[in-house]
Image (tube, rainbow, N blue to C red; front, top):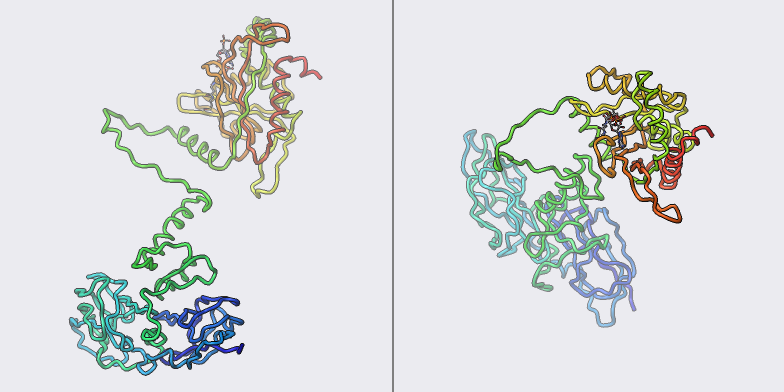
Length: 537
Ligand code: CAO
């Protein structure tokens, strides 16, 4: 079997035309007329059909190569009976090098605007070529060279550019119309000094021509519909004109991923734009590409449903809302639940109430919980950390400062009790009371709300069985929600006995704390709250 070459046929004299797609691979068996590569000038893309049948044994061009007539594209092992027509045979249009829609014979017009017809220039003698895209609309301002319409033959699509700058006054064609040289596309009101090309005087000029007509051997290899061009990366069939390909390249769009809505699935510029738009929007909103992004909330007119009053959020509420949204979006949060048995704690606390009152202190369960949390932070230091802003390090803290969430008329505030591990229960009770009062009176200083390692949010006085508190990002990685204690029947191995059970909800930042750390922290905390003597160990 002889090895034969397939070369670039006459492409209307165009030189250095870029290879933008290679439609075959080594080993493929091709028939005459099969598309083997796609070349693209700045105005037209053209499929180069095989002029020999056989098995592809070598591909002699790469994507991006610039080729001219007679450049070797492929080597094929020709089949016995395959005819090997000369390359020229496949390019009947060579005799009529494709035309120049470019304004080669520009005729200056007066400075005043004039209405001139826009006509189809010489398109290599092709007749009845289908309009597959109209790139402008009435009223559009165009520059000379801007694409007006796209025509498509069996094998090539070609943009017909404006021959002068101006405003589109009317359009006489629609998608699907069949046009030939001289067909009127519409009327253009040329601007001032624009040069107007005389379409009739447009001699062939290879580089500017939609030379695509040349390699399209329509007579020899007619096809019912333009064959979709195989995407080089084999990501699927891509069928698009040069302008669309250029746009896709400029935007970095993989055309294989875009669905074409044009005739026969052809990709249009709008398809590329529609593909890119949501990606850009998602990127601008900070959302990642992998997910669905953060959809915006719809605007609702609540007055439609009844009487309403709109009240501005307090500054504190607004700051809290921002902080909560930041936490929600940045912290992969897990919440774990357990009940601590505070029966003995309550017996002790009640026994201390009189003494506390004598000191002027109010001893609620909270200082006990705060003290137990401090012990847990020391015993399980994985919670006494912050995620470093470098995203790669963890900040370990050698101090134990605990924030207490305080409900105030203006919103939520979190004063910080410092060095909890070094303070006694009365001292903690007093400090919490002082800070809570300052919070409610709006007298907390910023310093009193900073430096916390962990937060406790107690809703015990209000009720509830549990909740999922939000981690205070970025400074902390854990928060304990305390709900209302209640008597519950607890199985002691022999019988159910009434015990005072305190529901605890431990939320943590899973970037810094793993489930086992949290399990150990919670178990230790519950054991300390259940038996305060453990604080002495
Ligand atoms: N179970 C049952 N009773 C409880 C309880 C619990 N877990 N916690 C407190 N109580 C009782 C107290 O013992 C007290 O009862 P007595 O007066 O009979 O002793 C009563 O409830 C009221 O307590 P308190 O609220 O005055 O005091 P506290 O120490 O429990 O809480 C403070 C102090 C500042 C934390 C609290 O006033 C507060 O503001 N809590 C709201 C916190 C908050 O808003 N968290 C949500 C943040 S996330 O949105």
